[in-house]
Image 1 (cartoon, one colour):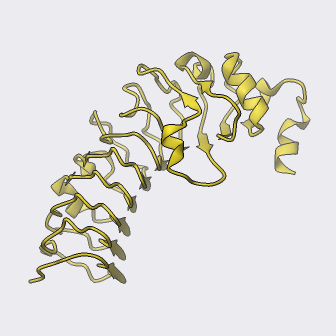
Image 2 (cartoon, rainbow, N blue to C red; image 1 turned 45 degrees about the vertical axis):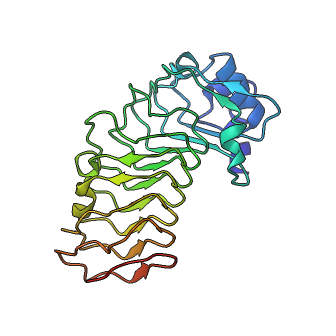
Length: 251
């Protein structure tokens, strides 16, 4: 019903719709570079018969985009090999209003060099091809959640306290190539959930200095970890600690 209401006022002109939800409409607007400032949300199901090329130009006029969701109905690792969304390496996000970015199978190794993320609240890029998350010093004070589940090329997470000091959820389960976490992760005082399940190559975890809000810590399947991290601060709120399939020398 909601999708129907969106198109009622301008049934023949999707450029004036606030949200683009229908597969054929999204494809039509993006491939023909018909975007406008009226569009604030795009939901794009990857169940499409042929690839679609998204360029910087196709999003250039959608300057007020707040929500972008590119997804599959059923999660699958095959979306990395058979990615239906094609991007050029110089792809940029023109919108400075983005709040929610959900992109399953993001095809590039890094986030765009020009990407206005200051208002971003949630970043969900599961099954992505990212090798690292940050390449600049952008401060993202509103960022609440980062989810990069099953991003099997992700190698490192750099200084997260500089970029997202108010982060509450960091979900990295299934990042099987993850080698390093910056020491700043142990200082995220507002972090509630940290999920590192099946990060098998992670060999060490920084000292926990100030994770006083942490409620769930998941190390299950982290077979490369040999020592439980040193705890030098308050962790009174911890409710769940998952250690299945790990070998720890606990002191």
